[in-house]
Length: 128
Image 1 (cartoon, rainbow, N blue to C red):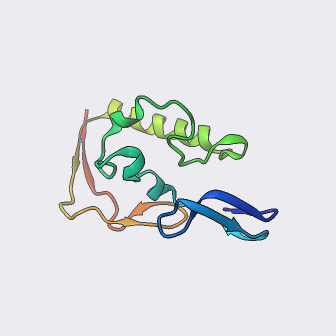
Image 2 (image 1 turned 90 degrees about the vertical axis):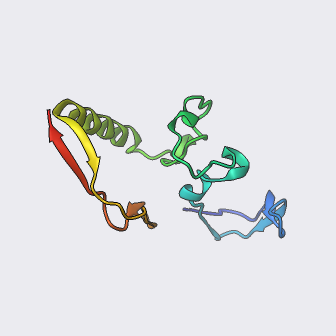
């Protein structure tokens, strides 16, 4: 979240189609939903909600994928979080031959300060 430090007119974001200028008054809290931003069909195509990891192979700037924000105010914990995810994934592959889903229910996402699964992520691990 950011707070506008002065009155400003953004070039887009207003009007019924979001293409008109938008006035933001000083003191206004501004937020954006990263989950929704990463699923915009006008940016990522009609399959924006599909899990397709290869779409990230051609990233050109840090603004293409923004779970940690970007620019001078990028999340200070980004490198730590990415390192921990890589370490955990590596250890799972080193210690287990199989990882199997154990929940047939449709995935239901809980939105908040972080994103999580409503029913958790039930898996079975087969030791190596």
